[in-house]
Amino acid sequence: MTRRTAVLLAALTLSTTLLATACGSSGDSDSDQLDPAPAASDSATPGTDSPTPSASDSASASASPSATAGSSAPGSPDGSPKAPGSAPATTGGGPGTTAPGTTTPTGSAPVTGAYWHPTPGQAWQWQLSGTVDQSVNAPVYDIDGFENDASVVAALHAKGRKVVCYINAGSWEDFRPDAAAFPASVRGSGNGWKGEKWFDIRQVDVLRPLLGKRFDMCKEKGFDAVEPDLMDAYANNSGFPVTADQQLTYNRMIAQLAHERGMGVALKNDLDQIPALVGDFDFAVNEQCAEYQECDKLTPFIKAGKAVLHVEYSVPTNQFCAQSNQLDLSSMEKHLELDAWRQTC
Picture 1 (cartoon, rainbow, N blue to C red):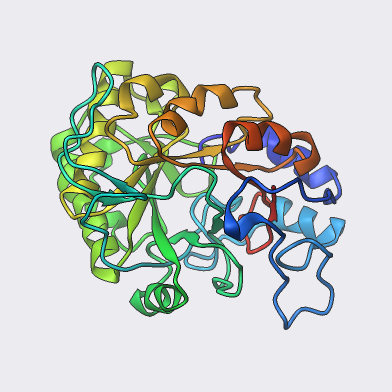
Picture 2: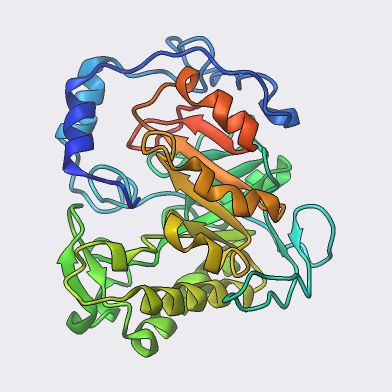
């Protein structure tokens, strides 16, 4: 996750878990009501998908994360690994696909294939830590590509779900099984998460084949699409003098890696470059646009018939769902550690 700041973590550590009532439906059949909590839970909060941890539990999750590799998710507060999933990508046109010959904005490369993608307003689940809770009533799951094997993807497909493969495309992670394959020359400054360092995205020739193997993994496990994280090094202190144009080149390369394998691909955050990239990507994943008052920057995706999968961590649903429903975003509140709990609009 890109907006993973020490300030936010500290704030969440000191605060108690926010309880909020769900907003009105956004029109998606799976979001007309809140998903039921897993049957095994005895302490789930009404209107949520999984038990809400106590304030002390939340503080412990944020302030004292485990450093054990493979036990949590990349992009989770401890910077450890995440979760699984999917089936062959849709190859025809129609709803939920990016059609061949799609007209793209100036500066974007034309889309040359048809790739599955979620549609505006469609409900989703994002779980990157813990065992994936497959009982959550959502048509789209976004889970960690390394931490989940093909059987998890197949099980979700059997339930009629589409599955998105989370991978980190913007920083090196020392806990991943392919960590040693990335030379020291592409590892820059730490990004604030244990064991992670920004990639030197200017070295496209070095990074493309290495990341291509990660996309191969997603494809082989049957995922429908990919969520590549940390796509805005140029706007961060990466340790390298990355320009906006170099970021555009890199992000388009990432989109091509997914499309070459028949999978859809999401643009993660990177709001300022959306006008140039909306034609290259099939949907968007955003964190905290309501908190930072920038959700309107995501409308080019909605106008193109492509979903914006959106989460907030510290803003309750009753403070952002009205705008999300108006903009047709697929919005929910999540814990920062991205466990199974969710509160949908």
